[in-house]
Image 1 (spheres, rainbow, N blue to C red):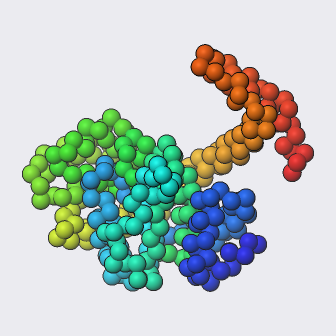
Image 2 (image 1 turned 90 degrees about the horizontal axis):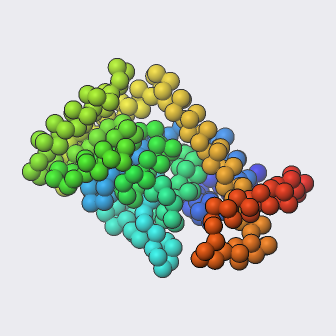
Image 3 (image 1 turned 45 degrees about the vertical axis):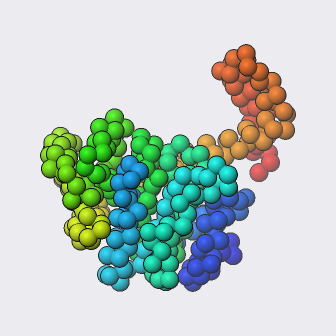
Length: 317
């Protein structure tokens, strides 16, 4: 068993941070660690907070942390931020809005850079959530970078997804286009003291009436984080949705679907790692010129890799 596993089991916060760093860096020990971690999961409540930039997601998460801690529960926050073009790190890594929680032993906050991930989520986010679950946090919140359609990837990670909107910002039209409405388990109208909240509420209710099923109707919650209004209602709806998932077995179904996607993603990563090493070793990409047909070349290189390397991968194991 990986040495970090036992330390995480005994709630060593440094081991937790080190394990996440190992995963982020795609260390060769990653799979061994995660395989051992998988059996230690304690079924924490996974919450996703997504929405357009400027919707007040970080302030909302800050208030949720206070609410969760008031109930005596521990919480981990995984904040997925844009990648710095210079350092490769998270641009908003300081999480300044949550700084008062840094001295609270019951709160763990980790910023992760997207590092070019097309899904708006770092590739290692799912693994980080699992590590935090194994550590024993009661609630794990994933706050996304908020870049539109790519936010759909959050449904691969969390149980309950809250889509945060604000009045008069054009959010709804963009979200209609992106299909994010389909992943919302609840809507949050933040900054609900602004003009236009009535129009946005009516539009969302119309949408909810078209998309909700008989078992669960997507709620709409109005919040004003600056005044701490609506946070109790939001937290209650999150817990209600979580109960719905596991009383109806919908939660088990959702996690099985997530597992299927994850297995395919892990296999794709392993295949790409093999292909990339082969291309680098053979200097195959040196064949590329401005006039080359990329489709034909990609197919040719892949077929060549399968013939020369595909069959030898098993031999190396």
